[in-house]
Amino acid sequence: MSKISREELIQHLVPPPGISMPPYPAKRDKVYRWSLILLVVGLTGEALGQFMESRPLEFWMQGWLSVAIVVAGWTFLVWLKEWRWMVRALVVAGLLVWPFWALGGWALSLAATAIMAAKETHCFHFWAGRIIPWYSLALGVGLIIQLPHLMLGLVWLGLAALWLSLVVGRSRLPLFEV
Image (cartoon, rainbow, N blue to C red; front, side):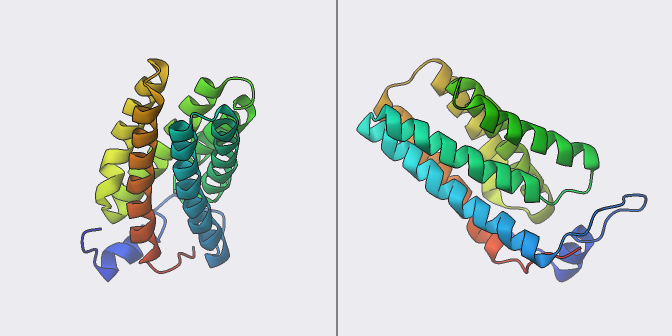
């Protein structure tokens, strides 16, 4: 994260004029942060499933990730109600689709996390958040063209590393409360 001044941080914790926001207690921010940690664990597990060429591990890691992403999406702090509900719709749809259509579940889940990463970067200037949306798109293409397991495993591991960087940066910020 680049240096962000205390004034900039406070500015991002005050809704813009005309925006009403439901309460966002610090406890909810803790849940959001923990869900992002579980996201990193799940991405690492998905990489492991690819390396091991284990369809059951890949399937259950996608489920793990889908649940972690639902929690993250539901506790995600964003001022605009439309964006908040779009992310929530994507994460819930990703969870519901996952058992029946893995690729569709991934498309929805990766789109939601790309939005979350971009928003975090917009507010707090995390370098990884600039890369995650494009990287997620490239991963989606890799899933569509069915890259070899070893390559997909490396790509999943790369996404886990990017999210880990963002999670570490986010953990250095104070707990948010609105």
